[in-house]
Length: 334
Image 1 (tube, rainbow, N blue to C red):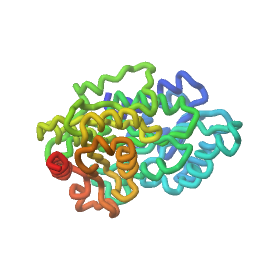
Image 2: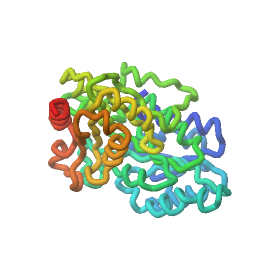
Image 3: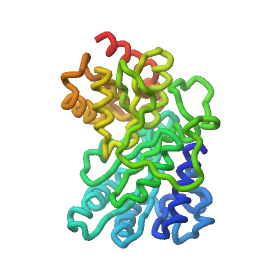
């Protein structure tokens, strides 16, 4: 399966297993979603469980909060992560706080799916990576897969979870892994080991990172599309780097991160979101607090810039192989 098919399969499996699971969002029903991630679900499960909504993100999430409190498990889709901001109040003030403010009487077991990130020439309104905003808010879990296999297992775990979860899907790798070389032919997931996705039920626990590549000279922390860009860059350089695919930002598998950095003595953090207050800043603080006496060089970050995502200069903004290679060379010399 490619990532779209894996995500579709996860929702299909959970709707079969649990009649309280419902799917909602703009164009998710009859049309099957702008990226076809919900294709066929309305025909199979009916319009009461897979339905189109008006173009109102605040309304979509507000209704989902009420559904969760009522006993359902809604899976709303925000068509592009860039448009999640109108729903911010419902997510932060209502969904994230519901269990706490009701002393456990009510919960909001909702999973908000949303494509995010650049690399598709979407410009400033279809390329943003807002994950850091939600990691700041207590009560929300934030999950980002990097492979079809992980996408299905993590999405199933998120739907089963009793807390609200933001499930950000890197749209640049929906149809295949991306090594950051935009001027070369695209590759598909066909034949890729991580595309071997079981058709039935399985789950990957939230809060458990994946060692995408073992190594002893440098730890690289990344997630989503950046996992594949980093893997190709490391392979090209021939560096004995350990690549940690975080998979979920909240909860964070700090134990795996700490063990890796203490082993290698060096840490590079890579993400596509803007640099200032991006999740890389939190990772840097956590590593410094736990691994300071093991570090042999300053912690480094390769990120997006503190500007809107540009259309004409997309590949200058995108943390590609050139910028990652320069950062690796510098940290290995320090």
